[in-house]
Image (tube, rainbow, N blue to C red):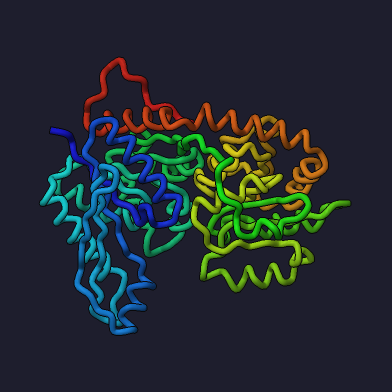
Length: 405
């Protein structure tokens, strides 16, 4: 009998999002290691539930199960019964559905991605059912949500009661160990992986004809953590004799959109900024070949897939020395690395890349080589195999200790 894993996550393809892509990738790695893999997708998007209630669209809790490439995907929907419902009402419904899944399938291991909502519910079930739980911290769950008085207690309890906790950067692991020192002997940090990509057969993106001069691009769901103010400041201070386009592939998160629109309108670069809006992953990848420089000036960011994709596209990358960005990039070797929230340092890194195509090419090729060697799926799969061996008690004396990135 194959051991059964249930991964819990807020998203899974076709949902758009980096965590969902990672869960899909890791699910197939675990299948290849001989596990039966289930993914419970928590559709706890509270704005959507409240909008349904306000429109009179009430619903019972539901679970839709499908098989996708060998993975059993369970999409859980909480009930919508009242316009006065609170988050705990939705979480209570989702927890009940997760319990029902366990009664039906009898999982051997639970594995949560994102430690606050997912991690707490999953770890509570593990404690009650007597099965081990792995929690995977991705970024904002500790960089931002740890500052929430309402969530802090759940986060620390979840860390304390995890059988193992994984992180996508040393910065994240160090914060968790500062909050809960007892996890030092049951945690590890390693980067996301990415498979090689062929950019030559991608369709021309919709706004390609609006790109002029040197293209400085970034990809993602843009919000406070991305450090875009500093990129705007840096680009406004550059001394250039040629045109420049700032290309933002993606859109601003809804709650910050008005702020960013004002920032851009008040910028002297307003006419040189192209924003694609929300696009598919395929179209986002199609924009990468058009970029001369990929900028990721994040204040904190886990291990962003967008960085790895830009490196695969052999782009010259300018990033900050935070989280995995600062661990993967080596200044003047495979990219340029600057301090976060430092517009002057960012401008100084961008200037020579704009004027020296040969430098861009050298750094871009080195970036591609780095990601092919160090972020290969086989490397990540070995790390997950060791984590599961630790949690299931199957580690042999000769097995190597889990190494940090």
